[in-house]
Length: 111
Image (cartoon, rainbow, N blue to C red; front, side):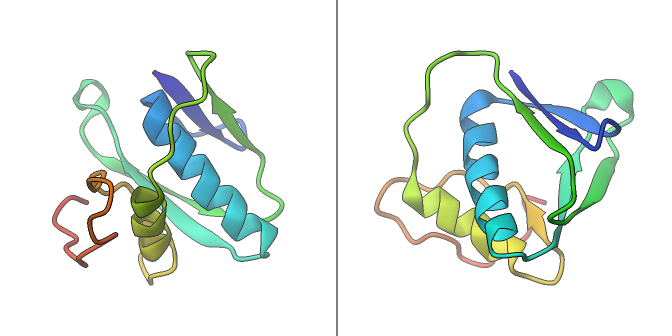
């Protein structure tokens, strides 16, 4: 399990493969100067709520990985995550689509 840490404050554990895909989407948006919200669900051990942070070019983001190997990247998952990041609610985790499947069907029930 890796960790996503926002500005030295809110943090969450995220599986390395998932974290890699989130990092690719976040850094692409920040390179283009596009701020966005990022929401994640909290673990049941700390209340099962959700946290949202505002990501902008001045944000201090840390992506800390447990493993040393770079996971394979699923382009359809990156596209699905980018789709949410470009919407009014911002980036949130969606299930990984199978390789070659449509990137995102617009169903927000996984949020």
